[in-house]
Amino acid sequence: MWTLVPLGLIAITALAFWQRSIHHAGTLAAMEQRVAVFADLLNTRQTISELTARTTDSGDLQAVIATSGGRSGTYRLLWQVNSMTYGEILSNEKQAVEIGSAREELALEILIDDVARSYRDTVLKGGGVLVDEPFQLFVTLMPDVDEQDIEAWPPHERYQWEQGVSPLLSIRSFEFPMRFSVGRDGTINHLGP
Image (cartoon, rainbow, N blue to C red; front, side):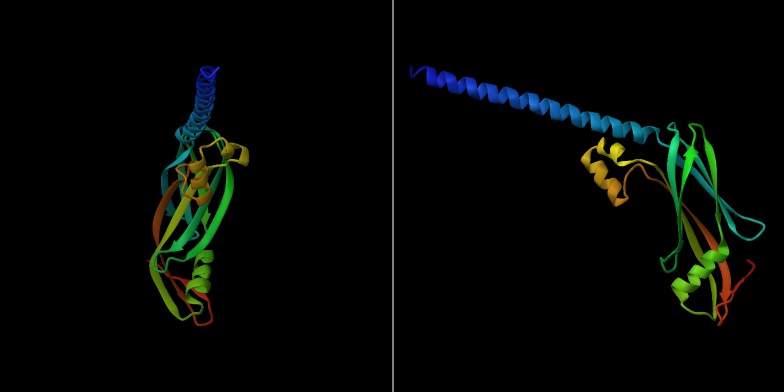
């Protein structure tokens, strides 16, 4: 009988190790599936391949974003204009866009009067100033994903997405000069180059 006790303990220990190895294999397979889902999205998503800008006849800025990638669908396009000298965000916009699987071009209109007013109100908080400095346009393109999509990702990728530093974000920037004066009464006058 005493010989059966050690055999029973050996059998129970072997069963516990076997169950643990099955659980570990299942967990590993689930994590590999999550990594594969995220890698597929990362490798096929649309990215900003080029960002150019030009001044329109009305003096505003038109940015053209060329995209490339294989995954068609809804994306979120975010853009902001910053004062490079003071680091202030002067404009912050976003919109949903539908992008096909082929190369596409998206156009953004940056209204210079709006940027100048925001600069006056945010940076200067007054008037009687000549402004002649560089500004920066940041454009971000990201897939439009929902909670169900994010649940299928590895946990660290979810965390990065929530922190706004995910590799799924495609970001480009463009610097442009602005030259205008702000009168003591707050009136904005655009000046030539």
